[in-house]
Image (cartoon, rainbow, N blue to C red; front, side):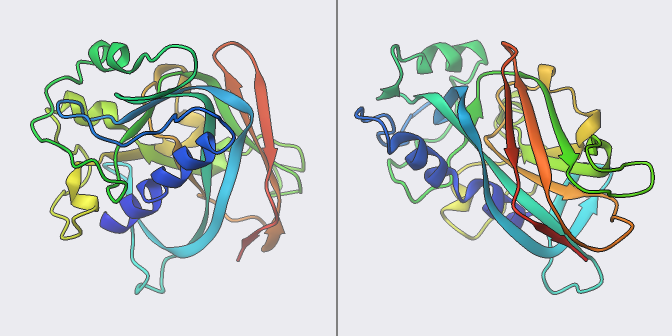
Length: 256
């Protein structure tokens, strides 16, 4: 589980830095909050807020019972492909700074009872700290731009053919600040600073209107290969809670 946490959370600093780069405000500050687990709250997805961070090929072991994944690069018998989706937001709140009009960090922490984290967190960018999206989404879908399989021609919604995985820090908080789906015995100091809960399911089976306070980096992985192996492009579509539809066309994605 350690490796998948590194993929999902290791770019959390990059996400926030990219959100801050175009702002004149010091929106990010330092991720230090003595009694809070979530270090940054994010809201209001940008119009160009879907970013395909990278395309990866590795061997993934899927735990169907817990809906979690682990990456084992040594196991050549289970080779899969997945894409990393990073979301960017207009508003980012931390304890000491804000990108937006009003800092609602303490308000959100109180709302989800994130006010008794037992450890003091070092104020360092070296740690993979938890972030959370405040908003819910009406839906998250993925469409194929080419014929995929017989029942899914070009333009079809293939959300049922993809799994999605993301961090769910709210589950960690509700579990008394302990990971629900991963063993947190990391030797890596940066990763071991926080417990991390990674969860997911078939994309079409997740009700995102009920999924607030999830992490801002997602992994999408096909659970069924196309009839013809090769390069495919997809369109990711997110409908926000106020009805905005934001789309992103991927670069060619190799499935073999």
